[in-house]
Amino acid sequence: MKKEQTLVVIKPDGIQRTLIGEIIKRFERTGLKLVGIKMLIPDSDHIKKHYTIDPDWIEKVGQKSIDSLAEKGEELKTDDPIEAGNKILDVLVKYMSSGPVVAMVWQGVNSVGVVRKIVGSTEPLSSDIGTIRGDFVLDSYKIADTDGRAVRNLIHASGSVDEAEKEIALWFNQNEIVNYRLIQEQIIYDVNLDGILE
Image 1: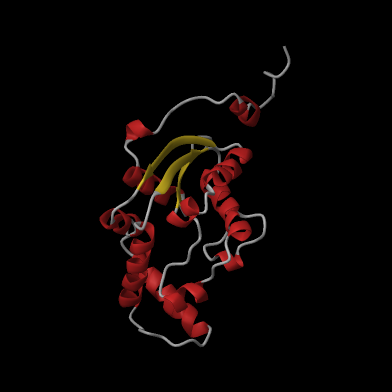
Image 2: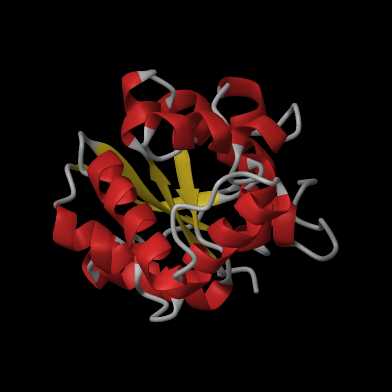
């Protein structure tokens, strides 16, 4: 459990808003350890692979979008979840390949859940104050849909341990993940804290 890993990608809007250091600081303050980091401009094929690691993702996200619009009483452009999902994928590919991103692997106990809590909900408008998205983003699904673009929410964070493993393998080679020890781990994980006093 102490070596659980998760993928975080600072998206192009996070880079352009010069929030890299602020975002990294938020994760470091919790006690998570950065074990992999790189900057790149992903191509469209890479982004398509990222979002379709779960083979049912297109249909799921399409159905979620249709259900959300229907619940709000808004006009449906399609009732086909595959068509809706592919439209969402297209705008995400355009967004994520529009400029540089910073991909990172964070490690620590409950890293997937801790990172998602720090990041906030996918839609910035409904993210709590104190989360990265709640503190730094004004965007919403409604504005993004009106503009025909992806919601600008600064960060991607893996949704589960299984998803994190697959995403890390897509973004990083094994030799790009560094195994090292931080002194603070002795405080965070030492059962008796018997290494403090001399």
